[in-house]
Length: 394
Ligand code: C2E
Ligand code: CA
Ligand code: CA
Image (cartoon, rainbow, N blue to C red; front, side):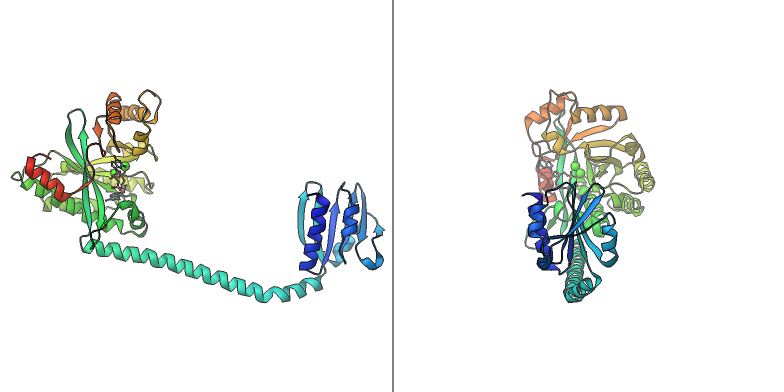
């Protein structure tokens, strides 16, 4: 659409909306079509070099050149107020002016609608805030109830040493089992628990349940300590909670479980705000003999400093990198992480291993601790217990 046609349409629209006056500044634009379409009580202002010319669209005076001098804009601006300035292109401006009387009438007309709109926005805002608060508090209430009723239960997924073809540990993965037997996965409630703080009591209860389960397994073999670790996921807020040390120590003592049977993995999803406090807590856990692992490495902020501060002995490579494993690419992310782990002298666990090709590829890269559906899916404790009872080997 041509510029002058756009301007004409705009002029007419504005004219319909507000009974004001319109001025158009034109620089080097053909003006005849504009002059032909100029609405009533409008002015067309042409600026060419130093020369400013004003035309009116009032049909009584037809299209007439009313006067022409350099100061015309300021003369007009003394009696009318600019309320809209819009660039149509880099040389043409549409300026809309109106007299104060017209503006006041217009304001009085639209004021009730504006108030109504404001009231609607405020109610919608209050409703959304309330709904958000309400659903967050409902989830909090449900999780707190689930904790009380022991509906949040640990599943265990084996971590194997693929060289020795032996299980070396388990990752503890929480599940919410409802009264009706439905299983809810952690991604559906852990983020909310992290946001509302329930993650702390949830984790503390889990530590006790896991210690109890370890003891049950040991009791099948006259209480002999198990040669495996059980690795519990810790959210950032929990590792910054000094009570974690006391809760863990009490659980180990109460169930007579050795510290090497327990490990913690810290996810890199949420950054740890107080790294000094987290470092202090990790130091105490480490002194007790509990290993710290860094989870989902490659996705977050893992570096030497984080490893050092958190006393981590293992890094876990996220499934997304295992999915894209390319054995021939020496510059892949997994290769870089292996080199990094070598330098930092930490062990590497590959997560989400699903195929024998991936397992073989990982072994050629020097990664022999594997976790994934190829070996085992997360299972409830009753399954682990059955396997152990039948084979006396987990
Ligand atoms: P994560 O720590 O990275 O745990 C590994 C996830 O990958 C688990 O999902 C596991 O079931 C899944 N997985 C393992 N091997 C395979 C595989 O070969 N293929 C596929 N497709 N998936 C595999 P899950 O159990 O749904 O847990 C999701 C996340 O929830 C966990 O990711 C962890 O960040 C979080 N989470 C689980 N339990 C807890 C907990 O007790 N506390 C906290 N803070 N977070 C937890
Ligand atoms: Ca994990
Ligand atoms: Ca992970």
